[in-house]
Image (tube, rainbow, N blue to C red; front, side, top):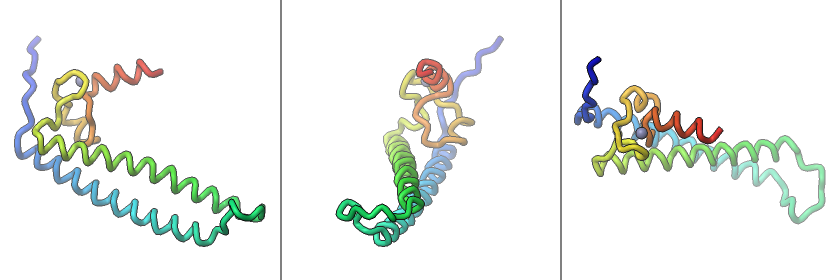
Amino acid sequence: MTILKKKKMDKKQLKEFQELLEKEKKELEEKISDLNLKEKELAIKMPDFSASEDSSIEADEIEELNNLLSLRFVWENDLASINEALERIKKGTYGVCEECGGLIEIARLKIEPAAKICAKCLKKKNSASV
Ligand SMILES: [Zn+2]
């Protein structure tokens, strides 16, 4: 059996991932600013419910606001990982697994360009946390 030598990512590939990440970053930032607007709208519609004991506040709207908040949490996390990935591109450590120092599979990066660890380490982590 021959062991395939892992090749370091070439510049062209790196550039592609950088563009991908920047595109995702832009989309996320837009989504988050939309979310901010929606949140404001909802907050205005909703009376100050800490001040009033009014229980007629729409449960739907509270739920919607909660949904927005959890969405924001997810998106802000995504945005942070994208920024980290872009930072790693600058430093030249992009595509290197944080756990084992090996190279992250290109196929994996294509699905998740902000990935920090390789598929093997991810599997290990996932099985450890179950
Ligand atoms: Zn690894």
